[in-house]
Picture 1 (cartoon, rainbow, N blue to C red):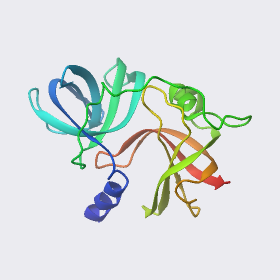
Picture 2: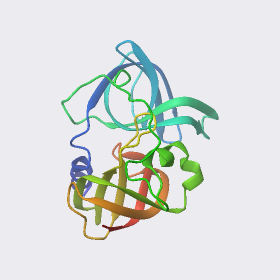
Picture 3: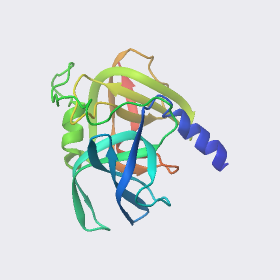
Length: 209
């Protein structure tokens, strides 16, 4: 069963780029490992589900999402910027920091009653537990994984390079490339195990054109 679950979760991230860094510092607490890594000329903190690593190790990982001023209760520490990372499965490699885009807070599909993906990531605590609506383009779909259908949306906005929003639903999914309204419940820090951690995800989603 665990092997099947891992395979299904892997299907959600097959297109993720891989990054490689050398661990400079390491902290473990609350089931997670926080690592300061050196990637080329850049260094920054990443967080992954707890693992047996040590300072000096080289680690590969995928980008799940950046968080600004993230506070770890178990460490009683606030990280100015931290990357929530997943297990590396893709062989594609590219620099992470050097390719970060300038933030763009406005959606290409802005209208009354919807918010932008950038606004959601920038102020996630404001929206946690609330029902929100996003209008955007479907960029990826995955069906019947853990009895849920998964959908990714992009609306042209981004906050500190975060521009991909994931929805889970029991509804039939729209087609790739369609412009849709997606409505659902905002959930933060969702851990599906096996290194698949979502700082922000929309659950119980419903879709319409």
